[in-house]
Length: 239
Image 1: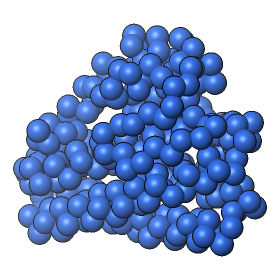
Image 2 (image 1 turned 90 degrees about the vertical axis):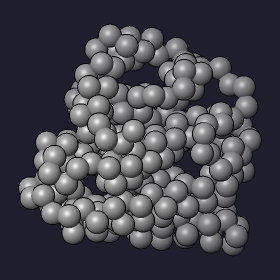
Image 3 (image 1 turned 180 degrees about the vertical axis):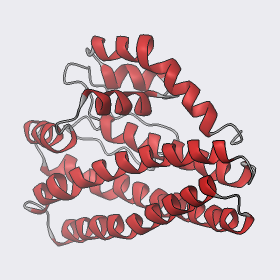
């Protein structure tokens, strides 16, 4: 999700857990909000994997569905970077910048198997109460949180600095629209809006949405409460 083009700029936003906020001509609010939401989710999944009772299969089924949403959004985000953003930056980057972009692609590749292994563990717990499977799942979720957390920090410190150094605002807007706002069904748009805005600090939500009043109304009147109910079902033991 990218920030509304009509929203005002006032330096880069800085959210909890964020490693850096490279300044420059481009407003990276959308990137930082996505990263915040990934971190939010992984913290909650790690807590849920530890505290959800083995025998509560309804909770595990809700967690498995919620992990599927997280994995889908992350895959879509990484695909936009791999197919659009990194190639655009590579055309202008020096050797050091190219090494950063190589690392970004490699880290995406390393993260994917961890996400798949967590999905398998969630599905197994949803199907059959198994203390050994839950113990293995705890390890996988924590590993995914640590691996993705390192990647997000690396990206914020180094790769996003390349955006500020090499991409003029018009090109950043083009890449955002083509690769990060690719065609989605109304259901997919609604899921993404609810996912990214859930528990997002209000100043960040206001900046992200800017002049997008219809999206704000959709969130407040239609999406917020149903999504919050589903979150409570999935993360009822996460604290």
